[in-house]
Image (cartoon, rainbow, N blue to C red; front, side, top):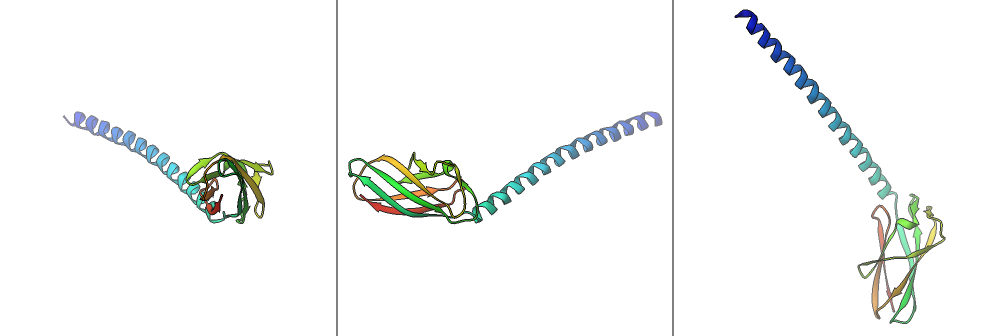
Length: 143
């Protein structure tokens, strides 16, 4: 009876070692994922804090029935942005745009011109330009 007890204790000990090792591996991998996510979140926050854009002007050209909107935007922050990663909203609707200069790198203190074509509607309108990390600026214009 003493031998059987020793075998059972040895089996329980080995089982506890295997479970403990497995648990450690899983917890360690999970902690690595949390650390990576925390680092990326901090990087995103730093970029948001260093980003600022300013709409210098928004000028419609054409008739109220169908007009084009030219928006001049300055990168007043210290973060380099991408011209092709912006969102332009006119009265809350995302619109496609072209940009000049055609280089996609938008450096600090740089200015780009966005053109939205084929808009319609008379009266006062609101335009919003959103950078790739969520920083935005508003402007209003009238047709």
